[in-house]
Length: 358
Image (cartoon, rainbow, N blue to C red; front, side, top):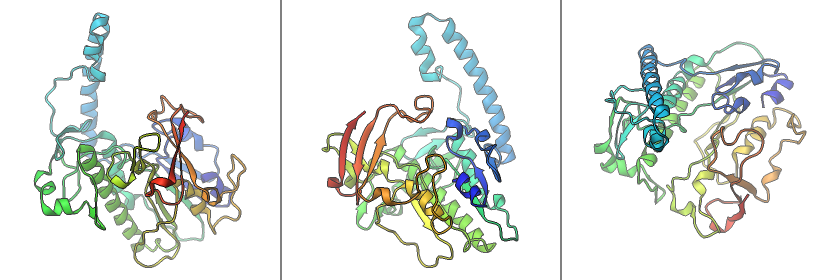
């Protein structure tokens, strides 16, 4: 999209592009040759000073411990390697300080100490969106992409504020009528069974709250109406929160929630209450939604194909693989995984077909 928009006379600002250069931490050099394009990473940039210093101290401590553990691992008999390596933890026995920033230590579904590193990087950047937003007079056109991982690298947050805390204890709120009622919508109850369910729910809410704060700021500074805003996730997650999406009898185990990412669209000068649409959409519709009525006859600059929403009329093909890390899947072809087709509504089992594993 940066290429399409800059070719149409826009300037482009890219912040935290996902997998740029097929790297987990994006390689911003891939944008060097694009005209009128600036690319940034917010890693560390918006952390409070005290927290920034804490990271440095903890990373130094962790590095020294790991170096010592690795030395023992390499010098020990091969028969002891697995036990000493301990999945990369080297049987860590240090007392965990509640302010630890590298790893959150969880206890059950409601308690935790410390933080997840990547979540904290992005959370404070997300809270600083107003600070990032610059207002200029003029008639120029701008394309802005901003990526965050607050919903990906989740951690337990303190409820009901949904804020990070060195020590989290949500036992009382989770067991309260208010805590239970939040999982009910239109007569259907979300299944909330383990820590993964709770922390993903909490981080989703915290992310949407901060995005809402930023949207209100755009209204205050007069930039909301003349901006098309698309909020889109790369994927859902297979944690079986919705029984109606679990399919075990179509030839493979499938949780449709993994294929149901968030997609919110606010068009230019739109008004009214937030609406939910049941129209069949995909996150691959994003380029079409972004260019619609803005760029005439948009074409993918790398494939030469027209950007439309026609390709999903008879359904779409989706792919699932456990090998999502870039050290396993890196480049333009995925390792074998499960392939499905789905059309119309994802909530109807008959609309899903399993194609096979290849």
